[in-house]
Amino acid sequence: MKRTGELALGIIGSVLNVIVIIALAIMMFGISTFANDSTFTDEVLSDVQNDPNLTSGEIEAVTTFIENMPTYINAFGWLGVALLVVSLVLGILGVVYIRKSDKQNVAGTFFILAGVCAGIVSLTAILFYIAAIMSFVRKPKVEEIDTFYVNE
Image (cartoon, rainbow, N blue to C red; front, side, top):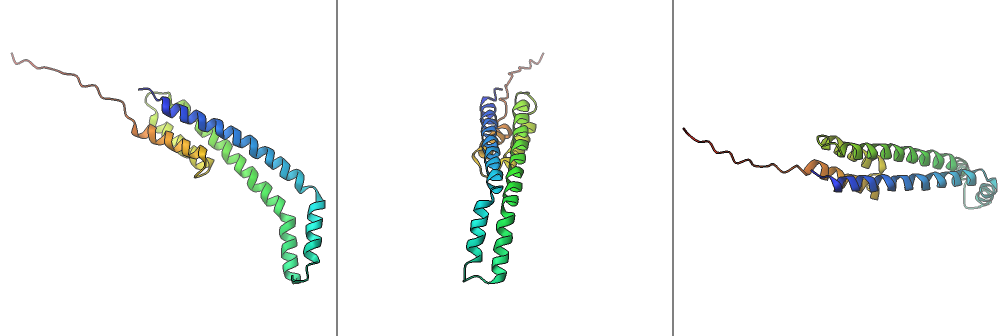
């Protein structure tokens, strides 16, 4: 049975994963470069400290948040890149297994796991989910063989 639809969806999902990985990595490098620039954070901190409506506790909380924000963004961004790489590997494994005639359920499982790692409702995840559903649901046609028994 030809599995062209599942194969195409798996390849398209993997290509989209590569594009998103590259874009997110570039964005993370930009954010880390921006975080090392202390001019912006110094201006924001001076504005917060000069605001008469804030109490000293609020100023301290905002200062701590602003100083730690680039670290948190950087950590979550690279975690996203790592999950997308895992999703890419699982998607490629799904494509490899969909080509084997008796491994459609394994391929469907890989596609579902790839979709979860890619983000629950992202376009890539939806493509992987559709490929998984197709690999689970589509079954090869059963050929009926007419056999006549002759009573002799």
